[in-house]
Length: 172
Image (cartoon, rainbow, N blue to C red):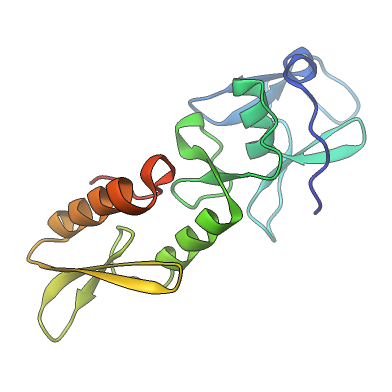
């Protein structure tokens, strides 16, 4: 689905209430096919995103949450979900990323044996290892006895060296 130009903050706030803790939108007024008190929109099972129809156009709820909360249209930036759950539009779970930053994040989420980004189990050495890849270069940051210790190293390295304020690594 191509991104439509988003309604502005005033328009959104006149139609919807947003719960930043839950990440759900609620219609302020009932209308055709909509009820008050019931989360607005529908979950698109093929993509995992919640979509909300406003004036015959569908919008991604994560992008609407960004406009609703900040008053700013994210434009070409992507409104990404920290935890990877596209249906979780809670404010603390949303961040703006460039296409490149989001591509890096997707790569680090694939196939790992750890719950933490950049951390995987080394069977031969029986230790947790940290590898962070950006721009085609793998940065090996060592092996650790505990998964959490490895995750702290990955998070600090990513935040300080590579991704800075756009880091998608989460401190355990």
